[in-house]
Amino acid sequence: MNNLTLKQLRYFEALASQQHFGRAAEVSAISQPALSMQIKELETTLGVALIERGGRQVRLTRFGEEMLERAKSILRSVDELEDLARAARSDLSGRLRLGVIPTIAPYLLPSLIGRLTETNPSLDLHIRETVTPKLLQELNEGRLDTAIVALPVSEPALTEVPLFSEHFVLVRPAADAGLPVPDRERLKELRLLLLEEGHCFRDQALSFCNLSAAPPRELLDGSSLSTLVQMVGAGIGVTLIPEMAVPVETRSAQVAIASFRAPEPERLIGMVWRKSSPLARQLRQIADAVRDTGITLAEARSSFH
Image 1 (spheres, rainbow, N blue to C red):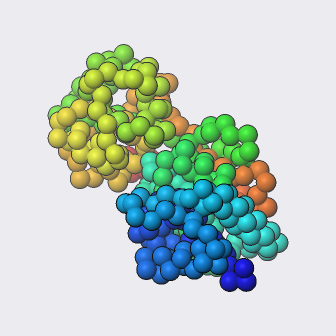
Image 2 (cartoon, rainbow, N blue to C red; image 1 turned 60 degrees about the vertical axis):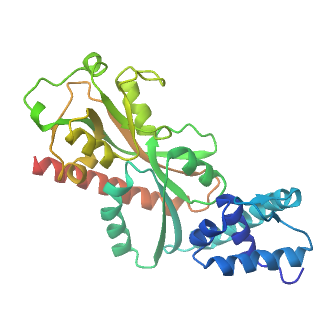
Image 3 (cartoon, rainbow, N blue to C red; image 1 turned 120 degrees about the vertical axis):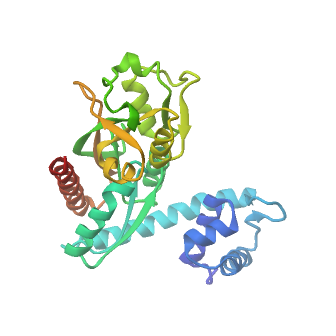
């Protein structure tokens, strides 16, 4: 098995994760024919088929499933060696795989990335944007180094570092700007637009409105905050969004923004990483940058208003 390579194992892991040659090639940053050839060479080296061919979706053979667990373990060990080497350096450099939830990424990342790359030119940031459950899974599997999420996540194997809080605001049609701000009970009577299942922001909004996970029929789902705000602008209902999203999402929509009466709904933003990570010291530097960026953005919003 002299020809078996770490690159082949990474391609195999990507294929097993994406269950599709095209998507696996895309996340691996190579062409689909090249990925197919590497998987075929891996099977030839092992002398056993790893995937079932012929169907639309990639399925692992029984041996492929066993191989996947071993491959993940090998790749995690290699990544840990790289992390140890990076941890020995005093500066922030090399690859850093950062996960971010969708209700934070578009609003925080532009400023954060600029701040980090300006002070750490050797840092190679790889960004992954998806919902919290997927980020936590990839973090536990060693596919991410850290993630920016809403706390708490209550994962025993992860370190949680609180960074800053932000309020939720009400978004309603521009024609309603002069109306009293509804309280929680009144919100239940309105057509409330929220993110689809899987987003933690949806759960936080439902909790504030005292609505169960099975909300009333008048509650409508959207795939992004931008979609929700545009639907409000079209007069379909009202929604809640985090303060950091206001400058971006409301600039092209005919909507009015209102703050709730105390106690205002809010969320706690923080970072999480594996307790076993040798990069803890470097990740705390990243956390400091995230905190400073969040505070700077909040101050900019305050001065604007």
